[in-house]
Image: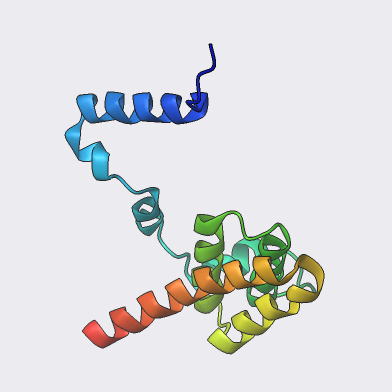
Length: 137
């Protein structure tokens, strides 16, 4: 009685079949599209919420977002959606693509090259998306 099937794979297949039965459009659903529904917060609101509005002598929103990006990279860049959103917010807060890339690259010393590479890939997706939008306008 050895069954070579993976029970997790069976469970995922059953869940996909059930979702398809409920709504055929869910067959091609991608959670990546969900993050585009979340707007980028304006720089002034970021400053008020967690920039110098919290502490006049504290870190500005751009620095806080670069630190958040470093932390997400240190965690292995596992949260692709959060990483891309943090890159978008950092750009809105005034960070340059070079500053973002440098922040991620610095984490290679602490998190390892695979984490840095994954985070850089997600950041490049945002940069490319932004370049495409700028070309379209």
